[in-house]
Length: 132
Image (cartoon, rainbow, N blue to C red; front, side, top):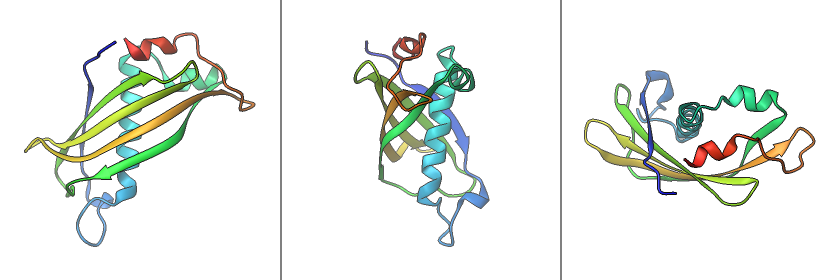
């Protein structure tokens, strides 16, 4: 089940930077979430359709290690890999690289639970596509 990472590229925008001129730490969460959504779409699934089917993919755990700051105008490359933990949980391992230098900027691990509208563990019929 070894898979190549999915790649998402994002350009850092001025308004994402704080007074120090670097990307605010909370913005990394947005970058990584966007990369997870593009990963899901690249696997032939649609996050909105999964939700309409009554299955919610929710973050249970978020862990980010920051290595190098990002600045406005930089292009970042986000690598995402998804592995199953259990029938109802998956783990996304993600790394953000500065595209121009290929230096690691941040890395994160996100545990995602698959739950019903009532909060009970459930599984979308096509969720296994994430692990191909």
